[in-house]
Every structure is written in C-alpha cells, then in structure tokens.
Image (cartoon, rainbow, N blue to C red; front, side):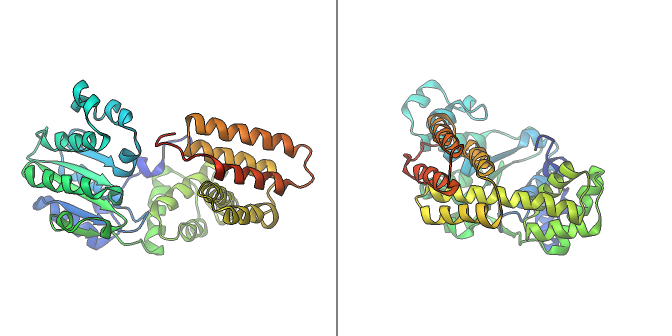
Length: 342
C-alpha cells in the first residue's frame, strides 16, 4: 500500500475514541496527570488512543511526546541502538564501546525521562507493546519512574497485562481497551471512509467489520485496501479484495511454521492453498518471497532467494508442484536462525 495509511491520516481525536469508559479515563488523566497502564487485545485502538491523548495534553506533542515500540527496540542490535537517530544524541563513543545493548536501552530511557518538557509541566513517554520488556528492564523502568515522576508521565501499553511486574502496574492508573463491538467498528469505518471521500455502501462496511473481527486497525486498512484496489467499498469489492488478503495471511503463517520447524503445519497450509484455494505454484512462490522480504534482510534473505530460484527452476519441469514447494519449506526450516535485524 503506497498511499498514506488511513490509520495515520484519519487518526481519531480523544473525543472520537469509540469506547466511553476508556475515553473518560483518559480525559480524567488530563486534569490529574498520572502514569497510565493501557491494556487490551490487538487492534483495540490502544496506540491511537494514547496518541490522541498526547495531542490533547501537550501544546507541542512533537517535542513532548515520545513513542517507543518496545518490541522494535529490543529487536535492534547493539550497533543499531547506538546509531538510531532517536537515541544517538544520548550515547557517546565510550558508552557505545563499553555498554551492553540492555545497558544502552536503559540509558536511553533514563535520558529521555530526564529532559525537561519543551512546554507545559511534564512530557509523556509511551512504551508500546510492553509485553516484550524483560524483567531486568522493567526493574530499571520502575526506578526511572520513581526518579522522574514530577516531569515525566509514562504510558505503558500492552496486550498482556500479566507480563508486567506488580511494581510497574501499581504505579499506573489502569485504562482498559476492550475489543470494539461490531457496531463500533462500522461507525469508525463510516467516519474514516467519509473523511477520505471514499465511495462505500452499508453492506461493504458491514463485511469489512466482520472480516476484521474486532481489530480496528485491520478494519481500517482493509477498507483502504479495498477502496484503492476497486474504487469503492461494497460487499462485492470487499469480498474479492479481502479473500486475496486472507491468502497472503495463509502464506505468512506457512512461512512462520516452516521456519519454526513445524513442517507438517506448513505443508498442510500449502495443500490448502494449492488444492482448496486453487492457487498456482508460481503465485505461492511469489507470495512466499514477499513474506520473506518483510521478515528478513541480509544473508538470510539472499539464501531464501537462492532456494526460491532453485524451486522456480524445478517448477518449470515439475510433474508435482507440491513436492518442490514442500522441499523449499523443509529447507527454510533447516536455515540457521537469523540474528536480530537479519
């Protein structure tokens, strides 16, 4: 999807958050600043709600609101952490040489919290996907929260509240973001599609909402994908477009299963694609490479391309496409696990 994402372009304001209780709790935190613990299932709108909150409370949110995706940061190598433009100003050459990756991340967090807000009396740091935080990092976070509580508000967002240690949870006011109802999802889609000037009908929005199954982000992006592919969001266009997306999801689950050594699961999905869904072997191979490019880079991606090239060559004379694609899946499972970022 090359166009700007509707999830970003038409992000909700705080008073547009579709969940009344969560909206009221966030509005209450405007009057009485406090650390927040925002939790709920994937696609419930946690990140969008916190961003809306930050725009409401800060005159200069670009300066006084910091958003860190914990999962992304921990996936970086030490070198990538040190050279990341968000963090490099905090890390001198000596610290870069002598510190571990965990120490660098802890240092970045402490430095981020120690800076005075540009405007107003405090700034906000969002730690998103916080379930990825190791316990030692959580302990370091607890100390930072205690030390800089006067000038820094922390918002911890997670799908797994039990993954956070009690001292973190006890220092935050809980904000529960449940999965949106079908009606709430349809209402959000209607507002976004209207703002985008996209043609739609009620049946199309109902179908997209059902497809997303309580995931607002998926619903909005599915509506955008349908509109960009077909020029309108109707029952027919959504059905055609989103069935293709489901096939892409199946290929990704097949690749993940192969790489994790679950060959039987991977081959079962391959059979579904070739037999039940009727996809050609070349289409599956193209989609497999697209998934690989989204998951890997460097030497590992180059090796996957080499294996796929051999498979593509074999398919030109194949009597049984399933055998050659199955062999490729087995070879994916035999590759050495990649380093973070590879």
